[in-house]
Image 1 (cartoon, rainbow, N blue to C red):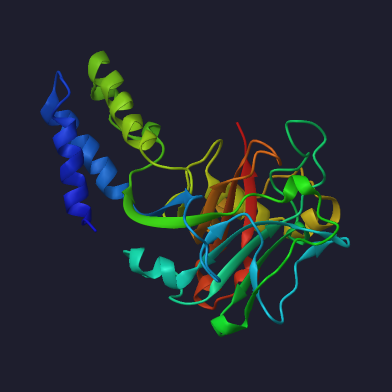
Image 2: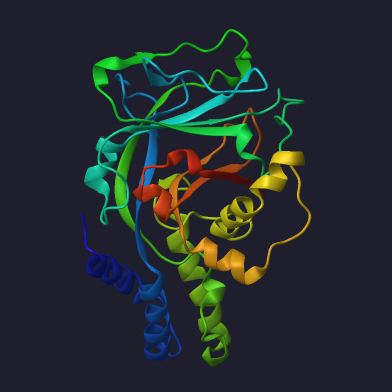
Length: 296
């Protein structure tokens, strides 16, 4: 596991392979920018060929629930099982200790049946009654492989794949937050953008912690919006009025990325994001997680 200093040194070496017109001023301002916004995170890779044992972190298939746990439902219809995370497997990859070192998290969300080959209809931000995050911190010998509910359509019987993890440092997602544009020549301007996005392209869209990569707007602001409007979303699944920007942006800083992953394509082309406020995470109140989606 490399340090943040070593990570930035690797980027500097790559930086020097590019022809810059004013390398000294570009390098200082750009690396000041990424140093201030680089954070540790955990990359997730799916490994279909790896055997999944009881309680292991995985995506798809069926959950390994505790003996007293039930498959969540919405209006008497089963939710879709997305993933389970064994926190003891993730603990060695935490550069900063945010998550508990034991227990299993289960992620479920409700979706209507697919309407066509492109998947189901859904709102990117929806009420908490349509998703559920369960936490189990009991004995592993009490876990059981839970079969798909009989009423679960085959489209949502997703293939199981093990998850493997890797620590990494994540640079700021948005290069346009860089403040020195007016000081750059046209050539250096284009090179900075190309360099920055070449680094982002090497990262995966499935991750734990860090700053989740958005497909649209800032993900933490979506979490904050959904959190502020929970009561209204419970009533009609839609809410037109925007909260005060200062309130939303302040609350956004309190969220931690628990899991970001692509949603299965039989549901639709979207990225799913699970976030939780720091206080709720500290108290293991995972039922307070917020789930939002973004699409292209």
